[in-house]
Amino acid sequence: MVSNVYTPRRAVLYVPGSDDRKLQKITGLDVDCAVMDCEDGVAINRKEEARHTIRKMLDELDFGRTECVVRVNSVDSGLMEEDLKVIFRADRMPQAIMLPKVNSPQEIYQFTENLKESLKGRIQKQKLQLITFVESAIGLINLTEIFRNTTELSNSEGLFDLAGVVFGSDDFCADIGASRTADATELMYARQKIVTCAKAFRLQAIDLVYINYKDLDGLEKQSLDGSNMGFTGKQVIHPGQIPVVQRAFSPSPDRVEWATQLLQAFSHHTQSGKGAFTFHGAMIDMPLVLQARNIVQLAEAIKS
Ligand code: COA
Ligand code: MG
Image (tube, rainbow, N blue to C red; front, side, top):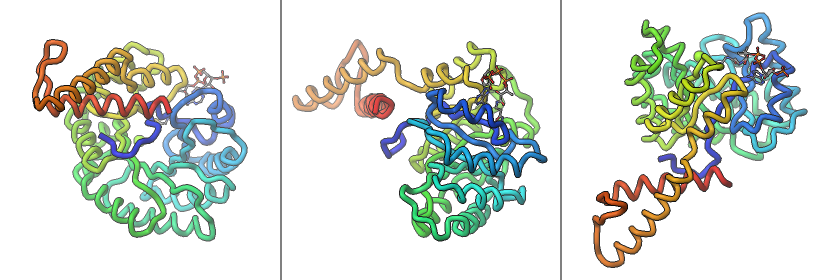
């Protein structure tokens, strides 16, 4: 599981940085994480406007419990440096930066240099969180090295903490020449690899976007699939998707009750010297106890 106790980013909502009206709506949505976007949600001729609008929103909006995040353009777009420069001129810093289309550790070095420059002279009240994206075959192959190098940079430079990874599935499909299907079998390997790598580094893993935003049944199914695979949250593009995703990535009351009782039974049986025992008709040993702990921990993190 993810090591630090945090409010999980169950629903991660994109809001185009050039759309003043949608940005203003963030404050009324009770979403876990709002991503003010400089990247693919913004047309190429509106990039400059998006940066400045986001900078203004950082200072003006009251985000409440919503984590305030900015997605900059990718390193190889040539636009990221300017994004960082403008955004960090705001009085209030975003809590996290999302860096899309990371293909190699070298890009993280470039990002860190540009970030250092943009943060010069600022006192950080809170460490910035960094969330990277995997959106290509080469990015997926290099994922472990990317996480390793980013963690090392985080320790040596002290500018950010690596907090999570997002699966940019549509760019990934384009890169590998896959066609999207309803049950996403073509993405199975990538999703499992992303979850495994993320958890090895104790990171959150944010699952794919469900683009048919009016189909809430399909969204629920795909969200539950992702949650069962170990993803901690999902990207959303429309306010109507938020409650469905939040529910799917929260343990149900029944599940929390089961886990709580199991942990009590475990404590009782340990005292009497038993490693394995029967609970609700099933054999329980340490792996099940660890899963129950995950559930109780997650429920507590969501409540707080
Ligand atoms: N963030 C905040 N508010 C949003 C929103 C978003 N992502 N998407 C829609 N809304 C608001 C709308 O402004 C509208 O409120 P209003 O009538 O008071 O203006 C309300 O929610 C209902 O929206 P609706 O009319 O159903 O959709 P739309 O036609 O305005 O927008 C999309 C549809 C898909 C264009 C829009 O949801 C969107 O831009 N999503 C983000 C896309 C994106 O960022 N993609 C890149 C990352 S994958
Ligand atoms: Mg993308």
